[in-house]
Length: 567
Image (cartoon, rainbow, N blue to C red; front, side, top):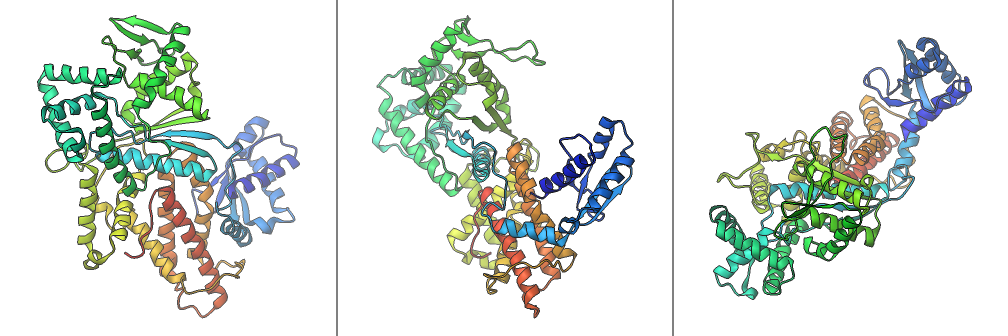
C-alpha cells in the first residue's frame, strides 16, 4: 500500500533525527495540482516536542531529499508552511506498485492480522409476504458487505433469517382455511392475495386478529393442527423468495428462520434466570437493559408476552445461542433498516448481560429508506410499496426503450444491466442515509450510474482485445497527465477498500470505481491507443487498461454486479 510505504519512509527519517514518534500520517493530497500525497503529522510532532513545526518540517524534508534512493520513490518532496510535507511520486515508484497490483489476485492488498469468522444476518424476508423494494436494499447491501469481507480474507457465514413464525403466518393460515384451499393446492398467487386481505381484515376486526394470534401461538407451541399447512406455506414462499434472490445474485449459507431458534429458547430462559435478569411486569417477562449512562431511554426487552407468546427479541437471542454453539463467530453483523436500531441495542445488551455473547462482537449495520422523488418511501402509482418483480419489470421497460437495439439483446444481458441499474443506484449511497430512487436517471449511460460503469468496461475491453501483452513488462514511462492521473487513481484502491471494509460501506467501492471510470474515459478520449504506431507505448497503455478493467470487474463483483457481453 503506497500510503504505508510513504509513512514508513518518513518514520525512519524521523527516528534517524532522534524524534520519538510511532506515526507519520500520510493522506491523499487535497491539492493534486501541487502534489500527490501530504503528511500533516509535523504539527502533532512539534507540539509533542515543544518545537517550531517549520523547523521540524524543513529538517525532515532535507533529510528525505538526501536519501540515496530518493528517486526510487519521489519526483519531488517539499515543505510547505506552516507544517505540510508535500510529496510527488516518481514514475518508477508508481509503476512498481502497479506491477505488484497486476501480479496479485487481490491487487497487493495487505492481509488481515487475524482471519475472523463473521456471521452476517441479512435478507430477513417474512414468509408469505411478497418481497418489496426494502428487501432489495438489505439483500444487496448485505451481499456486498459479505463479498468485501471475503475479499479481505475473512470467513463469512450468511444467514437469511426468515420470518417464518410471526403473526403473518397465523393470518395466512386463517385465510387459507376460510377459502377451503387444500394444503397441496396452495400457490404463491394464493399467498400474494390472502396476506394483504387478512392483514387489512385484522386491522378492522379485533376478533379475527385475536383468532389469527391464537393460531400463531398454537403453531409456536408445537400444535400439530397447523404444522402441515405452515410447512407448505413456507415451502411455496421460500421457493419464490429464492428465485428473486437468484435473480439478484444474492446467496446464503444458511436458510434458517425464526422457527429454527425455538429449540434454543429454553436455554436462553435458563441463562436469564441464572443471572436473575428475568422480571415480571403486568404478566409479561422482561429484561431490564438500561444503563445509568444512557442519554435516551432504553426500554426493557420483552422476553415473553402476558399470553405466553414469544417475540422477535426472544428468537433473536435464541438465534445468537445457536450461532455461538455452531460457529463461535468473532463477529455477528445484522443488516436491517436503521429504524430497528433500538431493538438490536436491547438484544445485544441482553445477550451481554446473560453471558450468551459479549456486546463487542455485535454490529447493527442500519440502512436508510428508498424514497421516491417526493422524498417519501418509494411507492407504485397505485400507492403500494412496489414488489421487487414490479421494479425489475419497470427497469427492463426503461432499458429497452433507451435504444432501438436494446430489445435485441439476450435476456441474460438485459438482466445483468437491470441488476447494475438497481444495485449501483443503491450502493453508491452511504447505506445509513435515505436516498431518492429515480429509475429513469439511474438507467442512463452517462453520469454516476451502473450502465456508465458497464459501458466503460466494455469500451476498454474492445480496445485491448487484439493486443498481445502476455510477455510485456511495464516500462517506467508515464506519457502525459491523463495517463498519470489514471495510474495514481489505481494506486488508491487499498485506501478505498480499507474504508469500505472498516466502515462496512460499499459506497466507498462504488465511488472509487466511478472515479476510475471517469479517468479511464478521459484517458481514452485523449490517448488514441488503437491507432498508435509506437508499440512500446501502445503495450504500456494496453497493460494499464488491462489492469484497469481487471480492477473494474472486481469492484463490480464486490457490488454484486455482473458484466454483460454487449450494451
